[in-house]
Structure formats: structure tokens, C-alpha cells
Image (cartoon, rainbow, N blue to C red):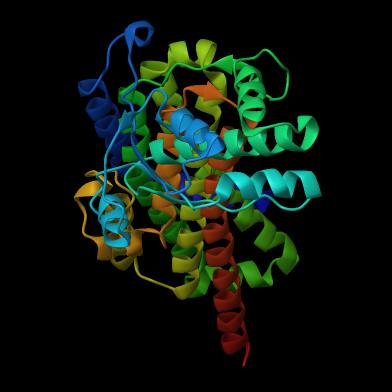
Length: 395
């Protein structure tokens, strides 16, 4: 406990960084969100996704699947060639593209009758937002429903389509859909995306400065000579890093909910939860980066530079500064290897969710989990670096 209190006193002695990176930057993100306020969510109409279906089959099953994908979305006509399909996704003409191969309907009926795996569908999702992924979930759910109806009821393709449509409309209880959802305010989404910079910069700098203070020769010798076991000192440091990450998350997410999402806490809590989880995961990743910087031994100025450069770069690649559709393909490919991209994907997916389902929420939590994996990887590298430095000092 004494070591933890010492760490927190050191943090509070550098409160200028807390004011600059946490308070001021979060205020800027909140202001930007307010400027994009979408008004009352009661009259908000979600933008339909641009979708395209290339049906090489033409069976009753494929026609029903195409109709389900087009329902509530904008239909986009593209060529039948492979190049046309690639251009449609690469240039962001469509958010979701489905290709149904020839013979898919008959193969699905045969597979259902024989108890074999359903034939695969080819689909592509745009990189610019979470809308395409939600349409993909709809297509996957409906195709699975067709297969289940064919396996359970049998009959002709027309019978299977009729039964599936009836179940989809709620005449038969086959799903886990609990409620319709109202998209979150765009102001909340913008503020949440911008907070990736505020969270990363504040958490990284504060933890790096804390560890720099602890790694000073006179302080390190005093800590090593204390009666506290090394494991206790390490646990106190990790607890302090975790506290810093949680405070930054609670401050940013709390302000967003307080000023921009009060209605969402009542009407859309299931959608709001993935947004909070995404920001929390990114805050923990930032703590791991700050821990690594401290283990490397960067100076205070170097820590500030690293936090600002990488914070801006991650936020930019995550789509906080501009839409991903405006970025070239090379940067989009790089963005997939940054945690901010997956954080933004979860935030946008939750913001645009129209129907609350376990599959939709699970997909968003998977994006949050990918961000968490980045944090675990960086933390492990930091532990290895710290162990090597300790070994070098001992020798």
C-alpha cells in the first residue's frame, strides 16, 4: 500500500500533464462532439447502407437471400466481373457485397437433407464503417435460418423460404432478438472516437513520467533497500498504472455520457456498453504503452514526443480525424494493425446498431478483444524489457 501511495503522489506532482492531456484534450473532443449534435434521437433516421448482391444462382433461396440483404438498404448495381466487385469494395461504392455462387440453393437443400455443412457464400465488407458488418450479420443469420428450415421442415425451396420469412418476422420463435434499437447520437460517436487521442496521450505520458521518477538512481536504490519485496513493489506499480488508465477512461467516457448520452443510458444501454468497453480497452492498451516507454527509460521530453506522435498517428489511422474512406488502400491496410482501428470499428458498430442481437453485440466485443490483445502484447514486451534492464544493472 505504501508503494502505491508513493506512486500516486508522484503522479499528482506532475498534474500539469493531467490538465493538458486529460482535461483540456477531452474538453476539445467533447466540444467537437457537441458541434456535430444530431438533435433528438426520437426523429433520427439511420442512413441505409449501400449493398450489392451478385446472384449467379437465381434459385428461390438465393432470391430470398438477396431480398433480405436489400431490405432497408440502398441497392447498388455492379458488374459481374471479379474486377468490378473488387473496385466496388476498394473504392467504397458499397458497404457490403455478397456473391452467391451458381447452384448454391440446390447445394444448401442437399446439405440440409444429408446433415452436411451448408455451402459457403462469398462476401466482402467495406473498411469505412460498421454498417457493412451489420448487413453481413443479417445475411449470415438469414442464410443459417434457410438451412435450419430446410433441415427441419424439408419440402421445396418455396416452402423453406416461406417458413424462414415467417420466422424472421417473428411468427416463429427462432432467434434472440430482444428489441429494436435507436442509433446513438452522432455527437457521442464523434466524441468517443476523438477521445482515442486524449486517452492515449494522457495515460502514456503520466505513466512514463511516473516510471522515469522511480527509475532515477537515488530513488531506485532507496526502493531496492526497502523492506518491501520486489514482487510487492511491482504490484504497486502495476496497480498505479491501472488506476491511471481507469481514471482516464472514467473521465472521458463519463463526460461523454453526461453531456451527450444521458438518453442513451435509459433507452440504448446495450449499445452504449460496447462504446464504453472499447474506450476502456484502448485505455488499458495506452497504459501498456506507457509502461513499455518507462521500462525503456525514455526521458520526459522523449515520452511527450512519443505520446503525441503515436497518439495522433493511431487516432488518424483509426478514423478519428477523417473518414477511413478518404485514406488510400495502403494506409487502410496499415490501420488494421493498430488498436485504434478496432476501437473505432466497435464504436461505429454500436452507434449504428438498429437491432440488438447477441450476434451483433458479440461481433463488437470481438473488436474490443482485438484491441485488448494489442495491450497484452505490449505489456509482455514491457515486462521482458524491464527484466533485461534489471539483469543488466545487477551484473
